[in-house]
Image 1 (cartoon, rainbow, N blue to C red):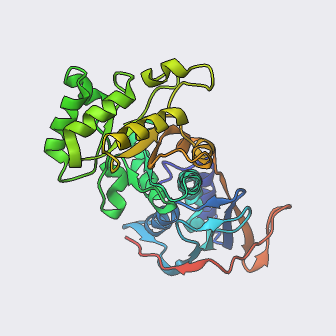
Image 2 (tube, rainbow, N blue to C red):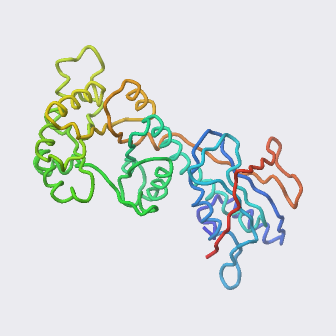
Image 3 (cartoon, rainbow, N blue to C red):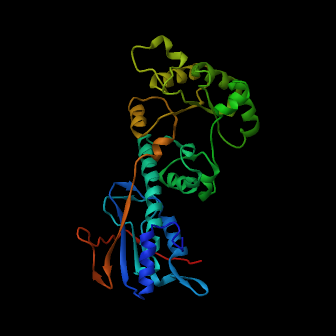
Length: 347
């Protein structure tokens, strides 16, 4: 990062020009985006500035330290379009090479935070399980997990995603384990509960045989108090067996309200009212809101790839140079009294 390896080349070229010319303007750079969003990536951006702002010196690296002044909002803050979320003031040659990195972490993490907050609000307080790890590169997990956490996700699926607050990944008895026990969901659930029931909430996928009502009852009968919940995950191209005689009055594919009601009614009738229902498979904020508006008895939602969709681009502008306004046409300095001064701790 200090060398500019991850930076757009024109920013490293800019630093080279300034250093070669011994030109050290004191600039004010402000950072903003254009959406109503939930801010993420601020802690990472500050860490990048603390560790990588500075100049190369004969002895190695001379950190900027208090030679630059940083102000910022906080991870999890709700922000408005065009609101300044971060400002950097100081010798431009000390941090010109870091713009790509700062904007990148803010853009990625804010996208996650914004999307997670949308589903959290749609669920009206019901737990959101953050399950998109399989849909993206493993290297994004740690910061994405933190962004999801500050936005309100109640659980994440990998230890990496939970590492920044000292948590652990959670999950359900997966199809792979069920297959490993010959397609016997009950046997797989028993073996899983024997190992983990004292460590985590046991949640079992019940769609392996496309008969979620029957499988949910069998698992609940077998595990008793060890079972926290069952997870409905019927594929969007499938119709659960319990709905076969009712097709024609509604779209029956996937996890639909009618399937959830059937599973809930069957569990309650069998004395398993404490078993929760987790719905997953193609859920986003709009679909969750529709389920909630209909009063579908879901206790938690597992949400995956929809939380990675979209963009939340950030822009940085120099708006003041050596104390004078110096913004490009169409931009101007936008002070934000909500921002707090940041103390950088160089390496």
